[in-house]
Image 1 (tube, rainbow, N blue to C red):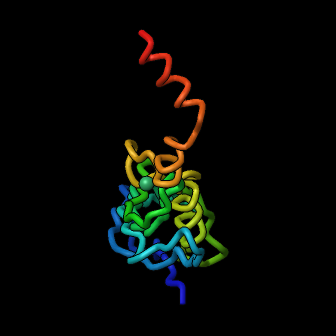
Image 2 (cartoon, rainbow, N blue to C red):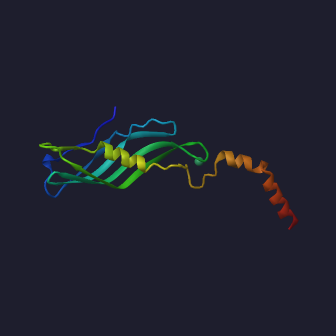
Image 3 (cartoon, protein in one colour):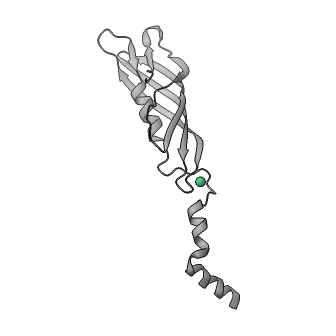
Length: 144
Ligand SMILES: [Zn+2]
């Protein structure tokens, strides 16, 4: 079950207030993308009449599969400039930030995750010596 990040603005004064915690709301379950733990958030929330502004920092740990070598690796996706603006319903004091938080984290996921920038990929490394074009280059080197 997905947790929700609901903030009650009733106790927030005009200066705003910082909210910190963890909410387990990234509930995707794909073969190559597995979140673990919850989203750690630190958000500064301000209320302007009926508008609620939340900005701050999000972090979510993921177990991803390297697009080069196919190995599992752990990484932390960070959102440094999270910003959401929501409107309070009539008479309501609560805003639900769950969807905004989830979407921001998913947008920061790398399209082609790599376990390490230096990763050369297992499949490619194994194929190279069998590629005849490389043999041709080696032969040129020997001549010189
Ligand atoms: Zn890799």
